[in-house]
Image 1 (spheres, rainbow, N blue to C red):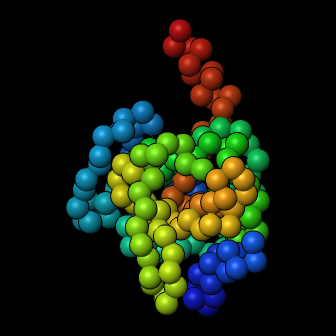
Image 2 (image 1 turned 135 degrees about the horizontal axis):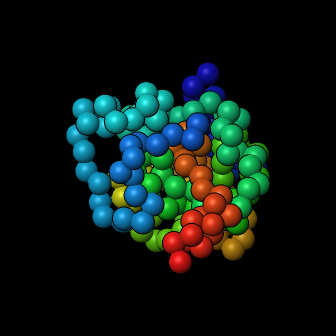
Length: 170
């Protein structure tokens, strides 16, 4: 069954809970975060730890972000690093939230992944090196890419909430 779920996301290229690490998680600090496996295990909920640190995958079609159309920004649920804007999100049909472009060149790291007999590119958070998902070459214009991301490792901030906090600080 596990292999079928991987194949489901992977095969898309063939046919063209809101969780936080801790209160010190920053949405603006971009410095690298390094912790031991023991520290991550203590800080993260089990499901987030499994996906982010053990390179797991959530079940397809279970993420609340998969069909979300809200306007805002998606962050790494582990460290708070900004990853994707909602205007780069699209319906891919693969069962996981999909985006065609990261928020910046440094927000994502790319690694070769040949697990399960497939040639894929894994994506990790550029700040804490947490596993996010994979990127495929079957996305929409302008990039032609599809970042297939586990919703469990995403945190979302609505645009109106961010604007309100900005206005309150003025």
